[in-house]
Image (cartoon, rainbow, N blue to C red; front, top):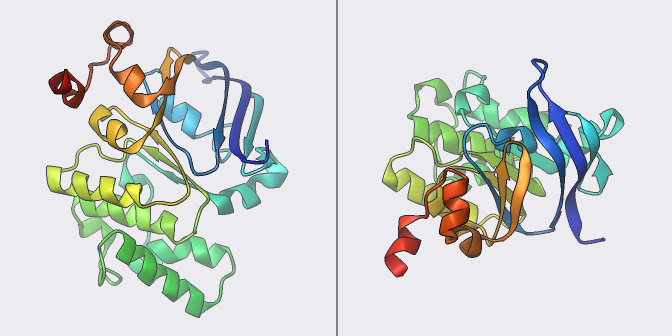
Length: 244
């Protein structure tokens, strides 16, 4: 389908210790969709995300932005996708915020003027104007998460894949981050335990258990299914409980 921006076809993955992390995963995502991937710890959420731009490669076929995820296509795929790691310290490694955000655009071979423009724009998107010369390692956890996100925005990706983007954030920072993600115009895939945020951001949800897709459907329908949520060791969001 021309509108399909991401496709998993019978994808399975095992870790070196033999643990099966994904089992025969198949689904597709349309351009501009905002979807969630949920499940208990160890369900395979992060492993799934890391297949999108070829960090992990396994049995089956993954197509991202119209390209099969394989060695010859990785450079082009990584221009079009951005992955936000659970821990921002895994993503920020330069002496200054400016250099962290410039890293991706520099590798695209963009001219200096365009790089500076993208840095300014991406910092504006995460409401951290003026942070260019600061060291990311001296920022708060929430600020680090937003800088890591700005570094992805600077690449102008078609697809953003986010691993637990709201974890360990104070309420105000969490609210601001959700607002930022709502304004993202591309395709969004979020792996998270924050089901309130999922309810707010994503119309569609994929529920994983032990590396398998248990349910793929409308977010509200899945998160409000008490039997399904209990069987998956998850809780119905308070917002849904209070609306009943």
